[in-house]
Length: 146
Image 1: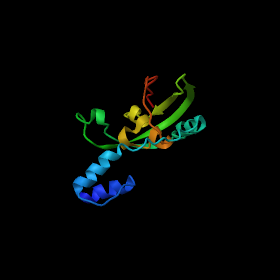
Image 2 (image 1 turned 120 degrees about the vertical axis):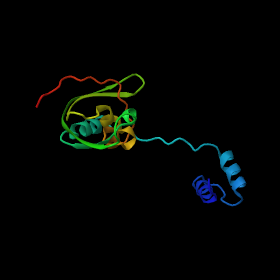
Image 3 (image 1 turned 60 degrees about the vertical axis):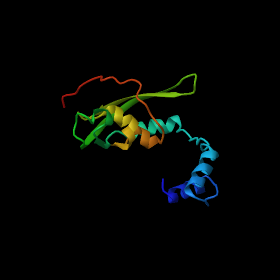
Image 4 (image 1 turned 45 degrees about the horizontal axis):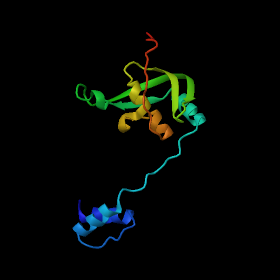
C-alpha cells in the first residue's frame, strides 16, 4: 500500500496518521479488525412488494461468473413477464425463505435475477431489497411457446 492509502485507513480507524509506513502499518495491525456492521433487513411486506414489482422489468444481465469461461461476456436484455405466489416462511433460526414464481423471457439467468451475481445482473432482487439473497431451490415449472 502507498503511504497515502495507509494514512486514509488510519484516519478512518481514528488512529494517529503520523509516522513512517512501517509505523502506520504496525499501528493499523494493532488496532485489530473493525467492529462488525449490522444492517436492517427488509420487512416481509417490502420483500413481497419488490418481487411483485419485478413484473414487466427489463433486466440487463452480463454473462454470469459461473458460465463466463464458456460464454462470451455480453450484456443480455431479458424481460420478467410475470411474478406471482410470493410465500415467506420464517424458520426457527429466524431466517426467512421466500418462495415465488417468475415467468421470464427465454434465456434469462434466473438465479442471477435473484442474487445479482456481484452486480452483473441489474436490477436483481438482492439489489432492490439491499440484502444478500441465495437461491436454495429452482424448478422450471413450464415452458411457454408464445
